[in-house]
Amino acid sequence: MKCTNLSIVLLTFAAFLQSGAIAQAPAIPPDADGAPAALKGSPRHGEWVDIDLPGSEAKIRSYVVYPERPGKAPVVLVIHEIFGLTDWVRAVADQLAAEGFIAVAPDMLSGMGPGGGGTEAFDGDKVREAIRAISADDVAQRLNAVRTYAHALPAAAGKTGVVGYCWGGTQVWNYAIRQTELDAAVVYYGSGPAEASDYEKIACPVLGLYGQDDARVNATIENSENAMAKAEKSFVKHMYDGAGHGFLRQQSGRDGANARAAAEAWSRTIVFFRSHLE
Image (cartoon, rainbow, N blue to C red; front, side, top):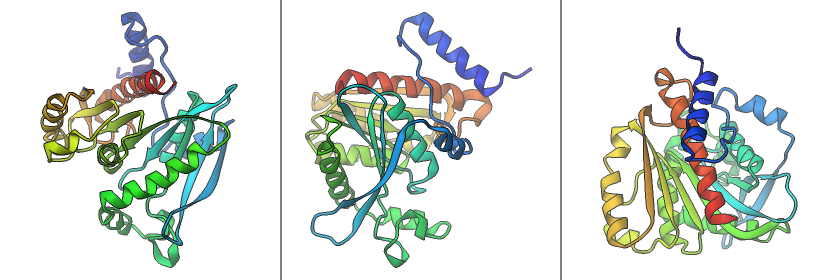
């Protein structure tokens, strides 16, 4: 009889505890199907804000979630996938807040959609086409505006990390190259830049999390490893057996491999951010 996804997650957490690799196994974000219910049932304060973009009349629509903790908290910027700012991305931000971080998930398509809208204004695959058209410099400009906003929050402690998924994982690399004041960066199955010289500009440690069955993205990892090592930068990667692309969003896939990858990768993400942001 096959294990359920919940059983797989619990078994994975137990193995981590026994090995001593991670002192505490945090709850993971829901998959895409479970995101709406998780958001509805969250006890945390989440709110929509419109953030000024210097040099533009556009506002960056962002979802901000606050942790329930005493004192100030570090900030984590959450970069969405090629699907835009979805309920699932908001649920990831909510789970980061559950672990003690102020999580800010901006809609990188804000002001670019029909009628000046964002992700919600696009039909079907049009959202993917629009996201592919955004340059890395434009992404960095928008993230810098969001980072400035987040740093000014009264509850913010001063350190900032960034995490991204799929397209957002690639943008984590690109943003780390362009924003040297980041304190930590986590890449979920995102391709690194091709030019070795770009990696020399990165000032923060980078954690890379990949599914084994993801040939397109994984073909870029060796270049990133070699370039980071040559530049004497911190890059740690983990490859999850049998998992595919997008395993945190699609936890039910690949006969339990995605669920195992999601549990282990999320645990490593939280430990990494606590190590570098707290």
